[in-house]
Image 1 (cartoon, rainbow, N blue to C red):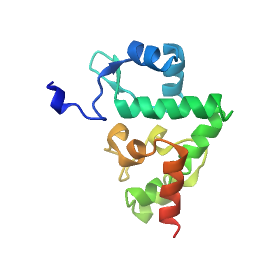
Image 2 (cartoon, rainbow, N blue to C red):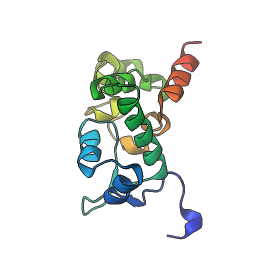
Image 3 (cartoon, helix red, strand yellow):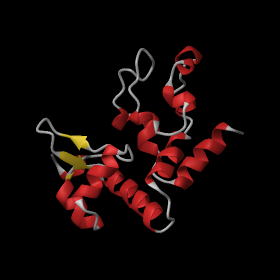
Image 4 (tube, rainbow, N blue to C red):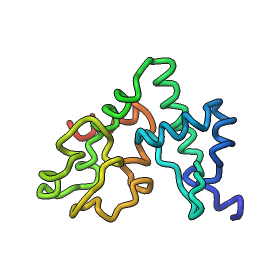
Length: 147
């Protein structure tokens, strides 16, 4: 890959590099993944890679947990409030049977989607996941859709 081809979304950092850069243990990074706070890119070998955007999201998550004393459960609930159905223009018939639309305890990208607009989406590539890097951005999205 040529340097000019690398963007903020290009997964280039290994879990050990991210751990060192952000002073977060690899165990904690894996826990954030299990809890649905972050979706690292996975190579065919199952090795995790992170992008610059992932590092920014992880920094936000870490600061929210350590400095603001927001629990992981609360972080998941905040992410679940993102109006994903509005962002991706989800049809009403899909919404009626969608856990992401009807529940508020986990982000949409952690749900298994059956027979709806998200069934064939790669959540890591979805704008709902990619664009929501911090609470300020999430609030802007909510305000935009409630005008």
